[in-house]
Length: 166
Image (cartoon, rainbow, N blue to C red; front, side, top):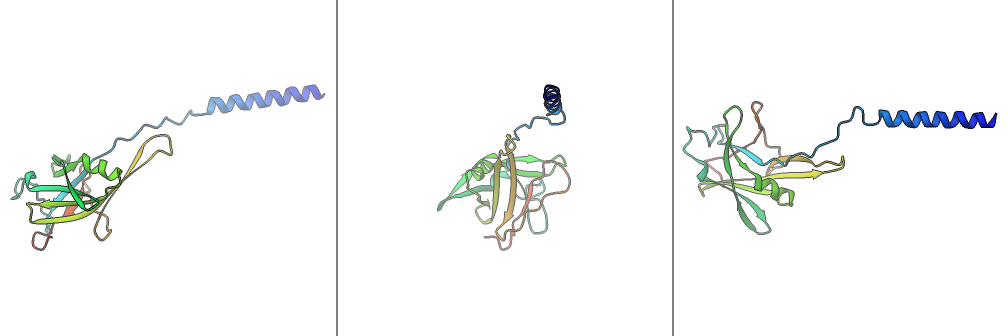
C-alpha cells in the first residue's frame, strides 16, 4: 500500500512537472530590446505656426540645440525630418544619448536671438530582460510638452515666443 502511494505520488508529481514544462512559455513571446528614439521637436510660434514650414522665414540652419553640461552649453547635431503628415520637425539622436547619460536640460536657440529651454528625460529599464525606454519632455514649469494627434512619429511641440523669447 505504501509503495502504491509512493508510485501514485511520484506519477502525479511527474505529471504536474511535465504539464508545467509543456505549458510554460506557450503564450509568452520572448521580449526584444527597444531601439533608442531621438529627440523630435516641432517648433512653433505662439500662434502655432510651424517655424520649419516652407512658408516660414526660418530654416534648419537658423536653429541650434544645446544641452547643459555643468556650466557649459554644448551644441548638438540636428536634422530636419517630416512626420507621415508631412509636418517638418527637428531631430537629434545625440540629445537622447545625452539624456541617458543624465544631461536632461536643453535649450533650442533660434538665430541667436530667441531661445526656449526644456527638459528631455530618457530612462532605460531592463527589468523584463530587455531594454525598454521611456521619454518625457517638459517645459521649464514642469508641464508636459504636447504632441500632435496625427501622424508618426509624434514629436514634442515646443513654442518660441518671437516677441519676448530669451
